[in-house]
Image (cartoon, rainbow, N blue to C red):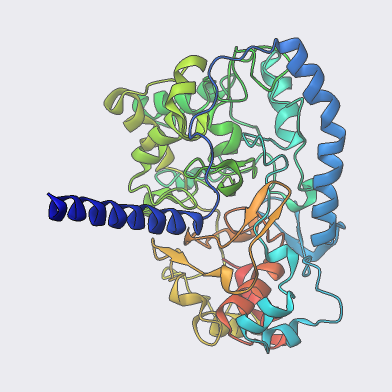
Length: 468
């Protein structure tokens, strides 16, 4: 009996030790939310929600824009003689602000550990918070909001609680051109218009087969979304029919609308994402900035079932989840998206390499750096300049974790390799839009990859990227 009791006591002590050990291990983990789920039953009336959040909006905007201005030079400085596919000027120069007393050359000479310990990683290279990180959700540039109101009247994508944060001169051309892979003879088929539910049929009837016209109809049809719906916890002043796929992916490209990736909890651990271009999805094998969805069909279905509602299918049921049929709807939407081609690149040959008879010496030197010392070609292989993989840049090597404007600033994790074809048409860059120009992007990767490019080499590399 005594032996049995002793064994039970020792077992209890051992179990207690396990609990203590587990508790200690748990204590070392990052922040954990109280619940993965959003509240479904909202007891506050809409009038009170609207009044409260509208009143907070100026201060929310002021605080966030103070951070943006601290990190970047937001002045309008277009590059001479360099435009996007149509006529919008491309912004030039490094816009990320350096830490006091540092130069880009001095930073490049330091190890990641030295940069981290001295706290001199440029703040513009940190993950960028959502304009209102505690809320997240879709936030659209004003030019998109204004055009949708002009075309569709009552549908208003304005949020009463938050403003979009990146100035228009850093954003893609609007509305962007549309090039069809199977009708390259037509050139830009958008006729300079934003494709919407109001005009898609007249623009594409006689050009596309019926399946793709139906797929396009679904891509421009509004469906309920977390912030734009009929419920009392929406973020539009009036009840809303919702958002469309092309509200973010204007004309199958992007307007850099922003929201939060739905894959993590708590809220402060969710990463900001800006909308990637749909051009060239026919050659891609992974979709989403950080998700690695395996097909464009998966991506299409996920967007409305997951991203539209922050990854919470419970709240989606309340607000009006649109369950897409894989055969009758998703496949048709994917077929249209796979027709979206890249803009012309007249200086590239059929293998995606510069034609020496058309390129400048700076561009040719930049191409040599791209595939050589710069190590860009390790991930961005010609002709489309992507490897269809995810890569972890391990940015956490350069800075200490910090809570900034509602975002737990840690590393980025695995990020999709974006195609660089047409890259000058898709600013700002990286998955969250933290890099406003191609010059910023070159400085970022020069530091992260440790390639130690000279000022001249970085200038030539930017010149090459503008030819893609």
